[in-house]
Image (cartoon, rainbow, N blue to C red; front, side, top):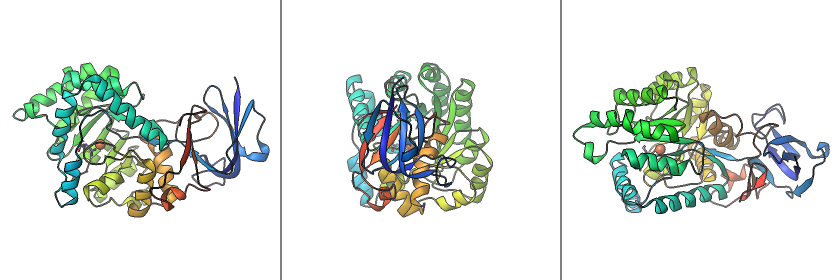
Length: 391
Ligand code: NIG
Ligand code: FE
């Protein structure tokens, strides 16, 4: 086993309160970190106390934070909906029906095109500091197209999510119950071997509570973990359902009432906020402070997709969460790292303490506060995964 010492870290965020200044971010000024060739953090602490290592890299006083964990993304698709975005910016509302436009383009795309689009987006994310990404299906909506999407996603991540229940495709418009039977039957059979999670868009115009429950229950019975697109376009039953079924995460949470906040606080379900969606659909931002005050675990993710939010940038989402959702820069960074890990029920990422994966972001800045303070500026100087530079 060889070791690498990352030295000259001006400010290290470990997300381990025991390691640093006692804050949730576990910050250490003037820090160093040792990674082993197995890809794990061996040691993190004040630079003068660093053990020797086989190789040494000087980071010149830069800030190092855990790699971003983007726990919600739809990256397997073809086509472009920029005209829909432009129409929205001229006053049109967002409608879930736009998903069918992408479904048509995705079904028509050859494997090579989908694979190339996906690889481009994953690389784009990596350059912006994302080291763990969840990738959903949901733009195929046939047995073969959903299985294809998940097989492609599995080439980039273990965090693959079966979202056959994204919308009812046009050919089942007259038989939505028949589509739920397909999603919970033959499509689940084909997709479960490629997926870790099952997701459903529980919303008016997509799947109601009964259909969403049937979908999630079928997936859970097959050994998949549950996550839910919940309360995005209006108040609905998604959050309560997610909590009741023990979902890892309820995502969007744009429209919540007190009972939803209480259910999230009482359950182990993470509230994953997607501020890029509110930005790109001109929707109201959810009240993140109420969630945090109630003790809910909050994650931040991009929801990168061609319809409701086509950003791959966690730094942009951090800046939005700070400016528009009133998270502090520290809370936003935690939500995009440890919060994302919690939403994926992972303990090996989202932190930089011994035993964790050595996945980290080197910022061209003295502090992570710059992620929100300097919005739109490419501050990611480099990304390391498993103890090695990866961008
Ligand atoms: O998470 N809400 C459902 N699905 C996506 C949007 C997909 C689309 O518009 O293409 C979302 O926002
Ligand atoms: Fe989504």
